[in-house]
Length: 64
Image 1: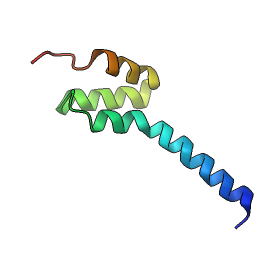
Image 2 (image 1 turned 135 degrees about the horizontal axis):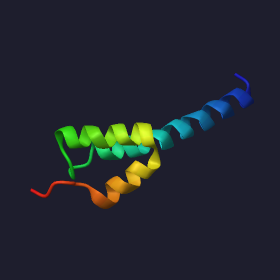
Image 3 (image 1 turned 90 degrees about the vertical axis):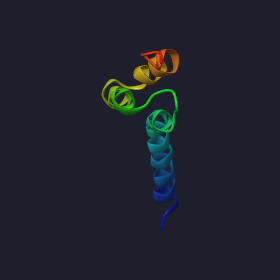
Image 4 (image 1 turned 180 degrees about the vertical axis):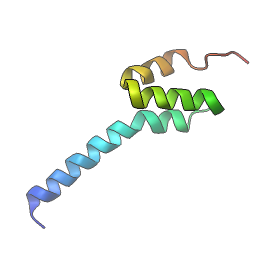
């Protein structure tokens, strides 16, 4: 395998990990559960990292 292809795969792997990091963070968090967690994950998928920042600042929306 050529080194340029290997380098490209490493770069793509790092980009994929950075893209999945907020989703994994919300998925394994204990701040929210159920439908609220799903809503935050969908917000991160469709709105971007801004939703993750709001999640870190605002979650959970409903106090127990």
